[in-house]
Amino acid sequence: MKIGAVLLCGGHSQRMGYPKALLPFGAETLLQRVLRRLEPISGPRVVVASADQKLPSLPQDVLVTRDQRQGHGPIEGIRAGLQALVHRADAAYVCGCDAPFLKIALVRQLIRRLTGVQIVVPVDGPHFHPLSAVYRLSVLPYLEDLIAEGCRRPALLFDRVPTCRLPVAELRCVDAELASLVNVNHPEDYVSALGRAGLGIPADFFLPENVSE
Image (cartoon, rainbow, N blue to C red; front, side, top):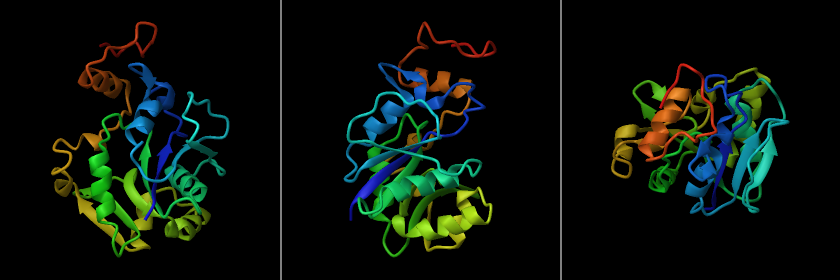
């Protein structure tokens, strides 16, 4: 089974106040870092951006696709990414571009559970991690139905197709601190992630005034 990767970066980054895909992270951007950490994936890597979004330079083997329908949130991004993988992969690990500590071992652990189901999604109590999950391409018709119904929440898909809801505790064997599930949503998260990686805020990069290193 060939597994691809889908990275969503078409959000408005309203909480960050700066396009997350372009955030400096050492010698690369946040998007470039996550792409690099997914290099061991057997299938193609796809970046899903909004219609006019600017992207950093990407490796030549990375596919770029765009959201076709605005206002549908991540569910449209997942659909667009999986659609780009038709005839190229059987399933895909889907994540946001803001997961700087993603571990490929966690991705492989999710893939191992993709037997007899169409989705494997980590769950932490009542909370799902739909942007740290593995989806078979066979869910595409169901995503189309949800979009046609005006639904924006990927979690609604889990009740429509066979889904393995994997407790995050079962992922600690490959990612003890569940660092792969850490997202960078606010300026404070960005500063914290840089510190965790042993990096400082770039001298020429300006964060909102209420955030400091």
